[in-house]
Image 1 (cartoon, rainbow, N blue to C red):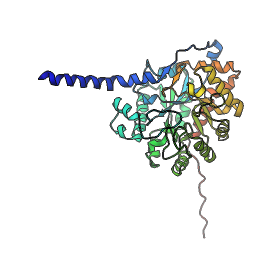
Image 2: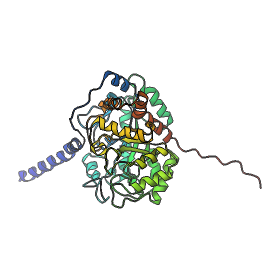
Image 3: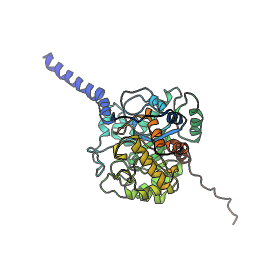
Image 4: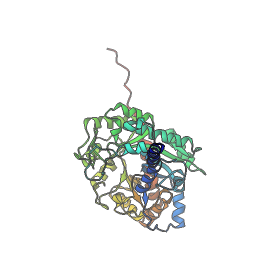
Length: 399
């Protein structure tokens, strides 16, 4: 009789161990890969230049995975030690709260969700199992805990003071890596504009309207309707610009991009992706869209995975960057890796000197490389996180 109860209990226990203990790591290993192909030789001159840069990456999804950001990991694309090894001054960490089953670049609905199972398997707080807003707030808490445990090596950036403190400290020996929070799809507002202020209070300073499906704010490039900004989307965009949250057009439909660029009062970012001129994938920006981003004073963040650059080599990254430079100017392009975003890449963040070497080989000057590798993104971020200043009303005239 005992055996009859004992065997099912062991079976359930083993299944639980696999689901909660093994599955999250296995899933991350299977989705975030390095392709193992050869790297290019980095000259001493290129390495010396790279070591003098302020490197900024405009997009990674590392907070989605269950591991300690401050400790070296044997999976994924980045962690604090690897960010330091790659001389990263500031990393933008995105909050992913929902992705559809069978996710693809052409057409998805928002009827299914992969992240719920991931949240449960990772034993996240129960509030995250049913609320997209709570998933983002949990990601912010994760970053806060990592910064607190980093002995000053990870600095969360939310305002000008923290930004300037980071730049002063990063140039010193063992200087910190900055961390800025972003959102991949404002479906986490759960249809309520007031939730934007809750996200701002948690430290989020950048956000895209959509991810892989249409939502209440806008059409996704990978959605079904692929429409533009909705009335709620326009309202949210205005509020973002007022409080100091940078508007990200990554994953927006072409109509959404057009609507955002027409309405923008502040610089707009395309945080991660490619350009159709060097990789004709619907995920990537057309030349007219690149010109539109530049007109706002924004930045195009070039990614490292195959659908962004039709390859994974640093030379393909450099070619996409060169196209933006030649089209609108070097001041409008930067890096947007999409590390840990279910992507396969050539190298992790500790090997970012690969891009510096590839840019040198493409004929970029040292000053152009400084701009591309971080200077442009730093300009965008420092200006974008400052709330808008409105003229104060003058004294009332006596009637």
